[in-house]
Structures are given as C-alpha cells and as structure tokens.
Image: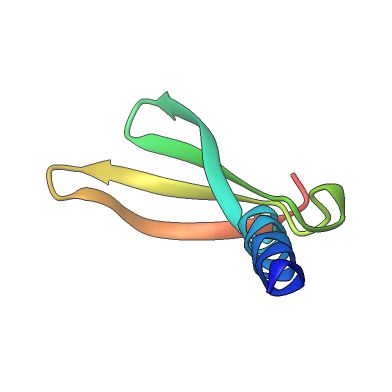
Length: 67
C-alpha cells in the first residue's frame, strides 16, 4: 500500500514538471510578444508568440521556435 502511494506521488510530481508556462510578456505599440517555456529537456521546445493587441484581447498570433 505504501509503495502505491509513493508511486502515485512520484507520477504527480513528474506530471507537474512536464507542462509549460507562459511568461515574459512584452508590449510595444499594438504588438505583444509572449514567451512560452516548457520544462521538458530544459526548455528545448520553447516558443515566442507575436500577437496583435486589440479590444478583444490578443489576436493574430504567429509563433516562432527557439527565440
């Protein structure tokens, strides 16, 4: 029983570090750059999104790999 609990907690810990997070928003005029960093392979899959700022929020987002 104790082994099952330890395995379950280990899987939850690993699952929480595999996801991605959005950080580093920079706004210049009507454009915004949003950086997405993942925690897989020390950020090997990071991307930057350049979006247009409008009244409805961020629109017309284009992405680029490895900023």
